Image (cartoon, rainbow, N blue to C red; front, top):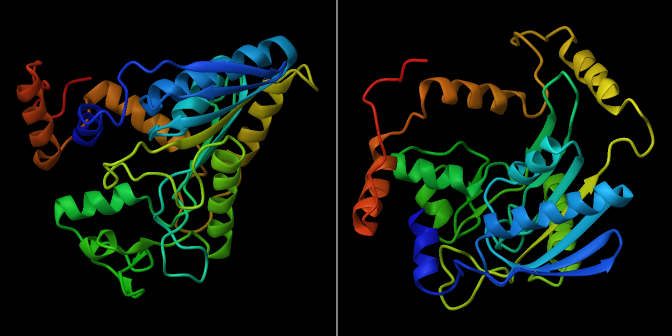
Amino acid sequence: MAGYLDRLERGLVKAKPNLQVEQVTAAAARLDGDDGLGFVVATRATGEAVRMASDIGIGIVGVRRSTHFGMAANYVLQAVDAGYVALVFTNASRAMPPWGGREALLGTSPIAAGAPSGSEHPFVLDMSPAVAARGKIRRALKLGHSIPAGYALDAQGRETTDPAAALAGGVVLPAAGPKGSGLALLMDVLGGVLTGAAFGGDVGDQYKDYDRPQNVGHTFVAVRPDLFVSDFDDRMATLLTRVTGVEPAEGFDEILTPGEPEQRTEDQRLSTGIPYVAEDLRPLQDLAETLGVPPLRTSPTPLDP
């Protein structure tokens, strides 16, 4: 939160962007994010993709001049909740080397997809091409924890378990080696090259680059699920039921599908509240005091359901 507010105060992010949508074809549109908050830009773009899909079955929106948009699944869920199959692609600032390298060039750019499934919970996939997101490494540094081996290299290209070394000139590593590296490169193609946004290491780092906007690129796709079949939801429910019905392997109690663990966590948080540690709350309460807004309401124990 402090980082977002800092960039707003510096004028690198616009609180009220002039979002320009240009219809390219009946199924495709360009959106100039005007350096607005990525959350605002991406929500508008997803809405435009859904609008086109509702008319002709599919909609795709390419976005340039955006900023960090948070959780990619948020926009998948926006489309899924409206009844559409969704794909979300984005690029990001350099943080990860191509496979075999030691220099950061590719972003830990998430790929996300989702589909409604009738009575079953929706299928929602949101995954980084990196072994771990940089946010996990920053959190480990904040809490004074080490990171697992295989997460990152230090500035000298050596494997490290020190989050400070990983963040100070180091790099995170691609998941599954060349596979994660290939996915990150694909995100740069679909998020940056295709849309006219920055790419190839030129996306601005929101935590370091204070002399220019980020120019992040996104692509959003929405597809009407009845394009080819009339019983898509039933077929999805059957698929997910078959997946969760597989006999668990040793060490597992049950089979979960993408999005299900997060849905369970959301249900629990809505019931008992969101747990925070003091290191998380203190800067947020300080920001609230600085901005003259009410502090977060907290409870020393979990809230009653």
